[in-house]
Length: 122
Image (cartoon, rainbow, N blue to C red; front, side, top):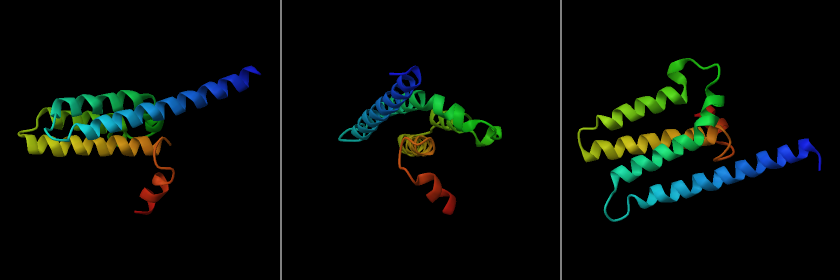
């Protein structure tokens, strides 16, 4: 096996493992809302999503104006979550952050295959 082949296999395996980690986090996030909502756990899980997708966001954000970057949008979302006035507002802000992270996941090819094209049409 050549060095190039080994690198491609390694990259492929890491991408697959990342998708599995994102899936596990998605299941954990969904479980936060069953029975008694756990807002702090939901926030922690979303932070783990962000950590997992940060390298992809860095690549996706290249050559974008600051206000259009995922880094900027996540920072804004975190500030809003920190300043939420009540549980209802916090719930909606957490859902907005999850949607933003899902869009990032799809934009970098680790979610729905055709979502980027579909969003351009919408």
